[in-house]
Image 1: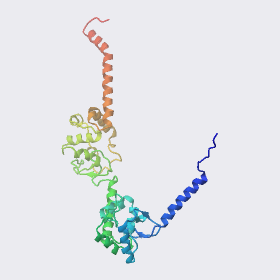
Image 2: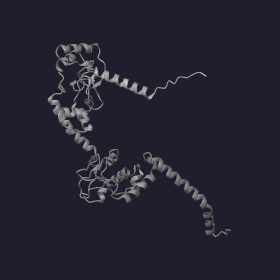
Image 3: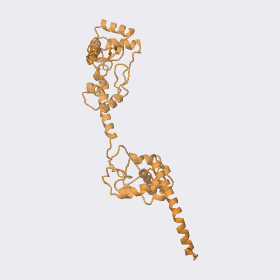
Image 4: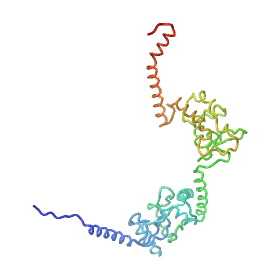
Length: 338
């Protein structure tokens, strides 16, 4: 039998390998020279920040020109502060304001606050000058950038960013469900929605009633009407999801709008169609059973299956009851039947 040598590394070997790898990374990081941040144009200290790319010959030439003027190297725009990846940090640096990530991204995009080079996180930062910029632009950078963070952002641009922050905060607030000054939804009665729209619906005192975003979607894709029967038909569609010519005839007289049921100024309900849940529930179920093919999925599949099951049950019931029904008809006609 041949002796076999176990080549499986020991825990000590693995630990030593990891330490060597980390030491290599640490050494490589420590060798990075000071450079200008590709986002804010401030100085990234030696051994700090993130590496984006290696400098090429043209970058080295530009660094030599900067060195002659006593300026730190650009290093091919290959470095950036880790903090400059965060839009919130950028906004705070430029305006002194602490905002959420969503607000920061919206505001930076709206105000077109840009980094020094072509760095784009897909949301807030838009490139202005890339590594392929003209020689004139590259020389201007070599002359103008002195390591002061965000020196390329003018006071006017900073003021525009402050205004954009206010706009972004309002926009985000409106994206959350909120009430309407004209009251709850005239169709479903919901008190808060992400969007409100004018409508031909009126409260009982004749003042205009708004529609929530979901109910307005139905009205927006149908011919406009001010007739009550037409509005009720649209409300049935918003309630059930069913569409078709039969809605007006079958449910127009049975349906009632929230605006018909309450006094003006009613605060509305937390959920849509909750004020008269039982009555509206009956209309919803009847409309879906009447027009299952018009429903969106998965309601369509569910109500078509329900329709098939009811039809099959009716056929089976008819087959089962047919003999007794035939006998009763014979007896009623005076025929002797055993």
